[in-house]
Image (tube, rainbow, N blue to C red):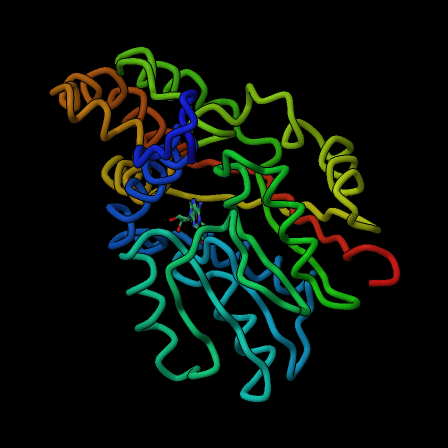
Length: 291
Ligand SMILES: C[S@@+](CC[C@H](N)C(=O)[O-])C[C@H]1O[C@@H](n2cnc3c(N)ncnc32)[C@H](O)[C@@H]1O
């Protein structure tokens, strides 16, 4: 890294700070991530592995593994003659996955940046609900392409349409909180992003631009039911929107946030609409033709 005078700088770049910020949120979420009695990440991860279809003996790289929603089923699919390397930047996620993988010694859990995939060749590279956090998506796509082996598949999940009846609630929370730091395609502002995450066509075009072939996408709609208001808050604390709650908390605004939105949550609990749905898109592409 060099500054305008040509001297080496020890300061992390804006992009590195952004990655550390996102990883910090997920690290603090890791104790409850996917642990609040809602089958969401497991369903999305199963769809990803169904689409990448790892075979016995294959080598799989998992980027941004979290607690293993797709790394664990991939490890079961490749079996002991195969190999899975799962990477994440959040130590809490890595520790949780390590414990869950105790009976799968061919699944190796390591700290690693999804933007820097380790050398292959990999038969399958998977990235479940993580690409939209990366500041350098273009560079990442190039590097993933380069580590894919012959007939390698790159599969990842990302968000499509979601239940817009919650927009008012999230907007009220966002209005209370001071402005977020600039983020990639991120935790709170993905929908405003005009890039590859804006449509299937844009995503497929980006993949082809980066040398991938035959991109295809399946979409599953995942519905979630919250048993009560506290369950809803536990879910929000357990994943990406935690970033917003942490910002409110750091400014002493959490009680005010609850006063603002709890009446709406109570109303929904009473009339049976304390539910949410989102579409999860699962895109799979192959490496360059002839690779
Ligand atoms: C929404 S979670 C998805 C986790 C898992 N793939 C799943 O489907 O449940 C995003 C994960 O990506 C990780 N992450 C975010 N940015 C990362 C980066 N630059 N490199 C590696 N992991 C990253 C987070 O720590 C978190 O575990």
